[in-house]
Image 1 (tube, helix red, strand yellow):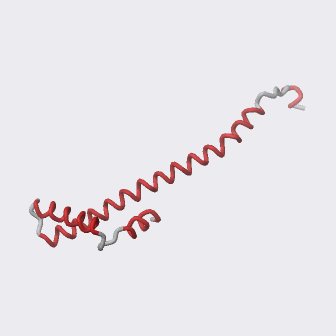
Image 2 (cartoon, helix red, strand yellow):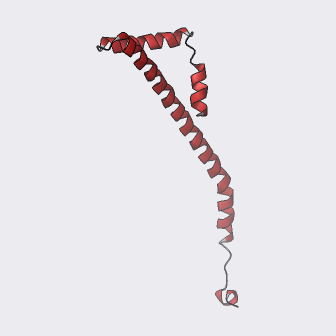
Length: 96
């Protein structure tokens, strides 16, 4: 949600690049036989789909970053536990 909102805020209809992209998609839909009004609605829906895809990629990147950090934090603890296994325990003493 955070990435979708951030990306959506950057889409300004007064931006010439955004206008050009919407018009290009609209013309592509018109060339496929769609009426102009429906083509414009479909172009906006396609732009929304692009934003959703980019937001999903950014979210997955965040998840992998957090998993990597968690892994790096857990490695020292695993090494400490593994180091304690070297001590031999006499089973006869452990039972008493």
